Image (cartoon, rainbow, N blue to C red; front, side, top):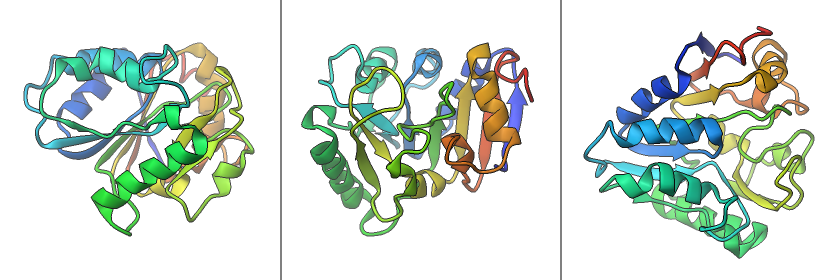
Length: 222
């Protein structure tokens, strides 16, 4: 992967600063590190009327469930900002209908063209998955659909998912990985120092501009 890898004492703060400057279509993701970035972001920007917010993936649970990416983002960010148009993935519909519903939303916004998001925030799991694209899963090979359901995720919580596909991810103008913690160090090494490999889905990300914001622990094996 071609990426600008940056090691920082405060990667969440740097991600928040980047997101504070985005206009247009911005895609956010789940996870504990993004939560901290969203909390910081909530106090950086007053007017969100020029932003449409999308999600990389979602667990197939109700929007108020503890495992919901939407609930996390709502509590950390969305409840504190005004004006943004939010496109929630309806996980409660299940993986198949939930994916179809999000494809319809993308079609309304982008027509028949491949979506071109202005900014996408991604995380990375210890198994090197990103979005809900897990090692070896069939979803990695999808090239026609923009959103798919994942019946069996590769790691906990073991609930079905909805996820953007790689062509949509890679069509983004700017992609920023936000990764912290020593438990991610091996995955970081595989993704940013190794060849593209379906066993490390993050390594298949190949956008126009890819930045990786890491703390020292996550970057320890680079």
